[in-house]
Image 1 (cartoon, rainbow, N blue to C red):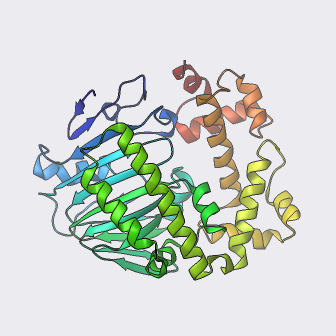
Image 2 (tube, rainbow, N blue to C red):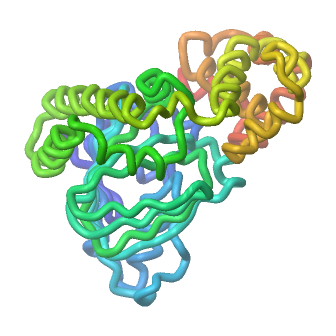
Image 3 (tube, one colour):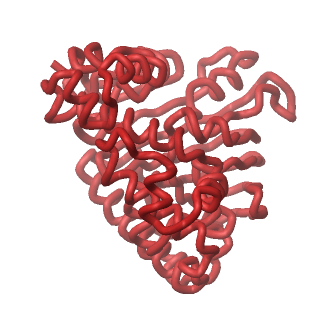
Amino acid sequence: MPHNRAQGITWDWTPAVWSWSPADGRWRPEHGAPGDCVYLEVSTEGIDPKDSYDFWRETVFYNFSADRQRLEGASGFKARASALIAPRGEVYVYESDAISGNRTSKQARTDGHDGLDLGLVLSGERLHREREGESVAGSQDLFFYDATRSSRVHWGPHRGVHISLRRDEVRAALGCDVPPATHVTKAFATTRLSRFLKVQLDLFARQIRRLSDKERVVLLDHTIDLALSVLREAACAQSFRSQPQRGDLLAAALTFIARRLDDPDLDAVSISQELGCSRATLYRAFADRGLSVYHYIREARLQRAMAHLQGARRNVSIARLAQDVGYRDASNFGRAFRQRFGVSPSTVRERQV
């Protein structure tokens, strides 16, 4: 297994597995995903103490913005983390000094990160605030995090582990759109399977460095399946399916949008007509999640275009690709794509060759 190194980071893959590496700087959507299971470790060890907090804040977090100034002072911060990134999901194991930060509605709308994390506090305490309420997770408590919702998180000195789940799998397990993360966190206490998931996550955290790649993937798959079972049980216990009807309306709207992305006339009017609701009700359903109809459609179109460019359809002409994701004009598509990803569609396609 290769061991590649940059300041504070070690990783095990070659460009044949993933064209991006930490040596290239922060990951961006155009870098795509690895073709196989990969593993990396990040640590502040060897980083100048006065720079260690900024290194961690700028290197590790993607769907969470750590505060620029630590409450306990600006220097001497210590942390380490291990990450397994596989096709079905990801797992992160970490140990860190206190850290806090937030997720704004604007970030949730614009940066493209929509992760759902289910984790276990191994030691320490985690406070999570959303508009709908707050939850506190202490040692051996499960927690949930949704990057599409604005929130604030404060960790004391802690150790933790979490898995990142696919939104479609979570929605299928819940049988509805994803409720507020603080509600899900509190519901874990009502499920009998939660204690088994805690054991599994704790085992993963203890053994991740000793396992082979194949063993890591097997354990991750089993952990994801168990996590989805816990969410399914929580949904039944807490009647998430009976949440306000706007949540169901949003789920129906997202499904309709996914089916009709190639329609250039797709907009709030056509969606509300299809769902039999007013545009005002549709707008409120999206606003409940910090979203807007227009920006969601635009993001979905561009993300689908990126997936096509990185997948089997990368040889399709840019003009045809623009039509397939609902753009009448290829130049408008190219301009929107560059604004979103900082690179042209043709450049992304050339990188896949």
